[in-house]
Image (cartoon, rainbow, N blue to C red):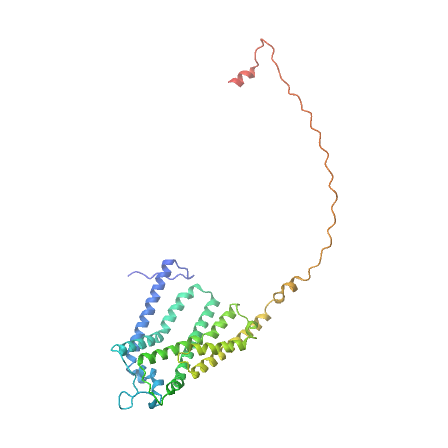
Length: 327
């Protein structure tokens, strides 16, 4: 049996090792999601450990409506949703089971994501990342829970409009799409204050940039809620807008306290403007005129020295060095 390769204590990996690590963690995450989907598919119609079936929990806001506001298809007053296609009930159960499996397996795939990115982070970065991931999950769950509880009032307002002349007969596909859209919008919208805090920590957004723009921000939040809520009912819109306003104000107060704390530890010279830090610029005075430039005297050309030509008398033997030069 081959021994398992020991891990590198420094966390350094080659590209192939990174890809192998990513593939392993993706496979673990997918396996956990599949197992969670199977559990959610079974839980949709059954009640394990004394809990209510998942289908009954999801259709709870619809069944809480007065009986005169919804159509009765069974004759005994039991609350049922309408199915108009042969595969609608199966696909709806599979979709709800997959969503439940994604939520139930979130500790596993979040752990795999955390384990993959942790080796490349420093100690303080690990602390910040863990805190932000935890807060993101908590805020999303809080928004989803609020969406579920406000759905009762939102459905009542929408279904009671014109109830004297018509009765609502919702299909499971329409109802679940409306519920999931509302939960997703509330959950994602609750991440806005976390984004503000992250921008403040990164030094991009400071409290002084937003402290005088609260009215504009509140109007923008109400406009966002009115545009994004799927039912366009006033109760859901007001609930989302007020919740976001409260969370954004908490984020602004965090930015104010953090900027105030950071200003105390900042050196004094960093709080000064450019003009204050450099001081007033004074004139150095007029530039004195330079002395006049006089023309240089041309130098006399040197007298060339005549070259000495040595002559040899006729019939005289050449010197000895002559032969040396020739050889």
